[in-house]
Image (cartoon, rainbow, N blue to C red; front, side, top):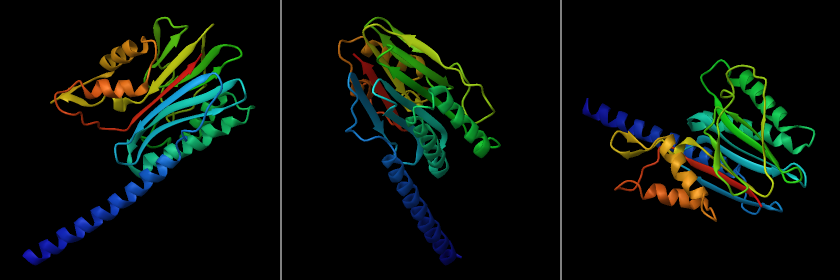
Length: 258
């Protein structure tokens, strides 16, 4: 009996190690789908922060030039973790990048993502929250879609920071008529997008930081003359007495038109 138990434990340990290696391979491939640091867009300051949790997940951010005047960018979060979430994330990335064709508007891009998600995962419990934007430098406007995602924070012309709340449900549940909203600016506009990994972690036993506390912290930092994404992470790390243990990937994007 003892020998059988030892053999069973060994087989379980071997299987676990194999699964862990495969998940790590998926996570490594997933990181390669994210943008490279060398990208630049005239007139725009762009910063991103991506700290993986060490396992495959569904966090996604991206940006590209639609034309010389319009920068399109997105932050999205697939429910769950593991290979399934990573696969759905890759599908969302492929569909979103179809928007590099100028004939596909922001609204249409999100519409395509939702239609395909409904076809592939509509009968399951998977879903995607998404915040996508077009920053138009010539017309000085920010067009955006927030589908069930965390509020975006926009600082217009150096004035008060405004929260851009979700006005659509998460994608992948049922067909939607996608709408978009617009924020106009005259001199400058800065947009902060992020995922829930920044606020869904314990600052003390059985006490979660929470979205509202995170938003107040981010809004305060955005009011400074120069904003750096790393400042948010540094401030979060200083909140608890012990180093924080984040449950999920930390993904954020700061885009500022000057």
